[in-house]
Image (cartoon, rainbow, N blue to C red):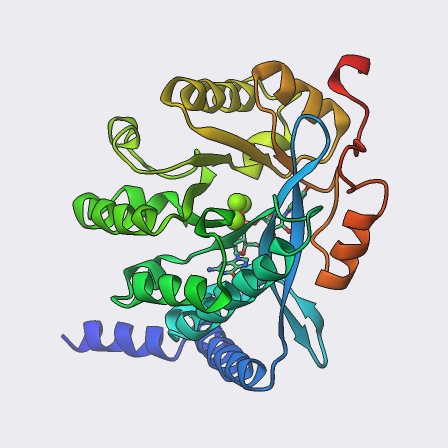
Length: 292
Ligand code: C2E
Ligand code: MG
Ligand code: MG
Ligand code: MG
């Protein structure tokens, strides 16, 4: 007994764990302040089709930290989830995306663009999520099918019936649904065909070594085939080289997102990118596949 208590005591005062706990608490405090003081920003990364034209963008959060510079979402989304800050923050990203879609809807050269918004599990589970999506769409006065919600695969693995009902409700609003980071989770293939989803996003980890790792190439190829057979759209994320793009194109994947085309950009830079030859309608970003 005493021994057990001693062990627990030692564990509790483990300086390393204490340091981690302190760092987490600091991050939570900083994030709350950043949210209050409008230090969070949204950047947009183009998604490109086979013809080289942009089909849309993904909205990605950034934290403009006064001392540390730009902090990426991988560093603070987990804390945002733990503290529930992800609820107001996520709602704000959704509003920003809908407002941007409303601006683009009035521009013939941009009206076709979609915006994908990442939805965390916590946000999706929130009882008011559907109503919030609907009110964002209404307030912006946009056509709902330009809005794409990116859900993670973990949602497809648990509480399937409840999650499926919620996804149906979202589809009934007219928004499109995408499964982000596909391939690294545990979703059951048999459920996939019953889900009201429009798109799978092949996780970046399979694209990275697609030219040298036969297993990665096989998994990517399988996901592409799955999409073809189930009638789903497919997009590859993290495409960095022309060779990766060409390989994916040969496998039948014709939409891409990655540094090869463009990094995530602040809205002003994105607008300039769209207006430049690279993003403009009818002008390919890259050589046509036939000329490769
Ligand atoms: P994600 O949704 O899978 O987003 C794609 C990530 O890949 C982004 O990282 C993007 O900048 C990065 N990326 C795109 N192309 C390339 C490439 O060619 N090479 C490499 N190495 N990376 C590339 P980012 O912006 O750091 O975001 C990380 C994750 O944070 C996102 O992954 C998403 O899960 C989460 N996140 C971002 N914004 C939001 C948000 O508004 N809400 C929620 N809940 N999560 C968000
Ligand atoms: Mg995403
Ligand atoms: Mg992703
Ligand atoms: Mg990813």
